[in-house]
Amino acid sequence: MSDKIKIILAEDELALAQIIKESLETRNFQVMHCKDGEEASVEFLKNKPAILVLDVMMPKKDGFTLAKEIRKIDKKIPIIFLTAKSQTQDVVDGFNFGGNDYLKKPFSMEELIVRIHALLGRISNDNKEENLSIGSYTFNLTKQILSHSETVISLTHREASLLYLLIENRNEILDRSIVLKKIWGDDDFFNGRSMDVFITKLRKKLSLDTNIQIINIRNQGYKLID
Image (tube, rainbow, N blue to C red; front, side, top):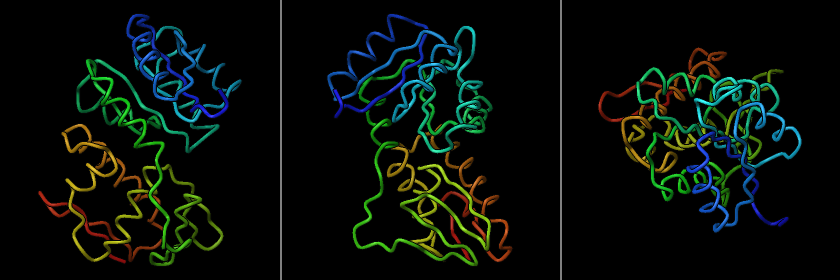
């Protein structure tokens, strides 16, 4: 059991939860199913998982509230939201509350598994520098931190992955579709909205150096200038 990847699944639809649980357990996951947000909160503190899959609409405590509370304790653990909601603002809210990905119901198990592995994965560090310079910042991909003078800023895995690609392609257009497929696994509309949110977050975290810009190249992608 010790070599299995621990995952908390918070889902109040028991039939769906059972399907997800059984599917993940055949793929080397140890699934801790919780039927509501409060139970998931207790389970998170008791058994530190590698990733959380949270339904948004749950009794006692909804997924957004739970994610916000978890982010106060752990800023890096990957969180995927499962929801029937599909409005653009719901997607934006999900990421603002600390989510890393957003999967609309109904979904295929293969899609969920691909997204879980994408979040758990790490960009290969072969032949890559430990520290990268960006303007007056130092970026450590492995530790997922940005340093500026005495200020240290923690990044999520997805923020770090996106920033790394921007740095590697600085002063060039980073193709939107390629990034979405590489980091999000799909270049659909909702993942595109997610990427826009993460770009906004990176701009804020890089704002201590006014020379750094992440420019939106309409219908193409983004360009990092420092």
